Image (cartoon, rainbow, N blue to C red; front, side):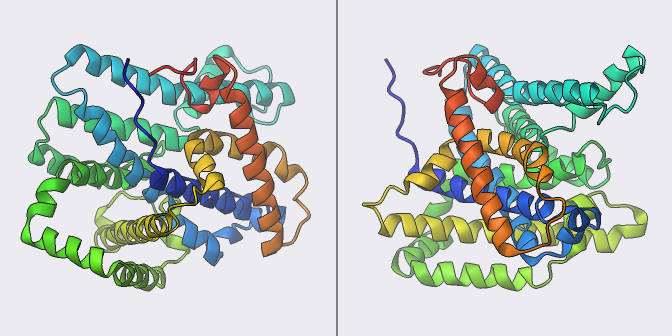
Length: 368
C-alpha cells in the first residue's frame, strides 16, 4: 500500500494566509454597507488594492508548482492520465454545478435572480448555463490551467512555440465569461509549473548557484529587497489596475496602455507572491517547533473555505450590514466570523460521505 506523502506545512501556511486575505477582501467589498458597495468605493480602498495585487496570483503559483508533481507521476501512463484529468475536472466542476443549482433554485423560489417565474424552460436553461460557466470563477481558472498544463506537458512535449502563440493570442481574444481573469492567471500557474520542472537545472547554472548561496547566507536581505520591490510597484496601483475593471484584451485603441497595464499586473503579482512565499517560508523555518495550526488548517481547507465564504457573505452577512459605515474594526470582526463559519462548515462537510463533493473533496475519505 502506498503511503501518503507528508503535507508541506509551508504551502499550507501560505495557502492559509492567502485564503484569509480573500475573505478580508470580500468583507471589505460587501461588508461596509450598501452605499459603500453600490458606489464601488472598495476599488479605492488601499487594503483592498493591496490584497488584490497578489492574492490570486499567489494561489495560482502554488497550484502550478504542485501540479507538476501530479503530472510527472503520469508520464508514459496514458490510461491513468485521462482518469486523473477527468477525476480532477469533476472534483472542481461538481461544486460549481451544485452551488449554481442551489443559487438557481433559491433565486427562482425567492424571485430574486430570475425576475420572472413564468419564463419558458428554454430561457431558464440558458440562464442556468450562462451562470454555471461564470460562477465560482476561481475553480474554473484552476481547471482550465490544469487542462493546458496537462495537454502541453504530456501530449505536446512542452512546445515553446505553441506556448508563445498561445500567450500572444490571449491578448486579442475576448475577455467575456471571465476569460480575462483566466488569461491573467494562466502565466502564474505555468511559470510555477515549469520552474518546478526545471528547478534542478536552474540551480545548477552559475546564476542559480550564486542566488542559492546568497539566499542561504543572507536570506533576510533577499526577503527585504523583495518586499521593497513589491511596495514600490504597489505605489502605482490604482482603481483601474484591477483585472475586473480594465480587462486583459488589447485592442488597436489601447495597444500601449493595455500592454503596459497587463505587464504591470504580472510584475506586481509575481513580486507580491514571491515576497510572501519567502517571508512566510522563513518564518516557518525559524519557528520549526511551532506548527502554525490555525493557518495550516485554513490552508488544508482553503478550497472549501473559498467556496463557502462567498455564500456566508452574500446570504448571511450582507443582511445585517446594509446600514453600516466603513470602518476597519467592522471588517476585522466580519472577517473573523466568516472565516470561522466557513472553516467549521468545511470540516463538518468533510466528514459526510458524498456531501464532501460540494467543497471540492472526493466523495469518500481516503480516496487517492
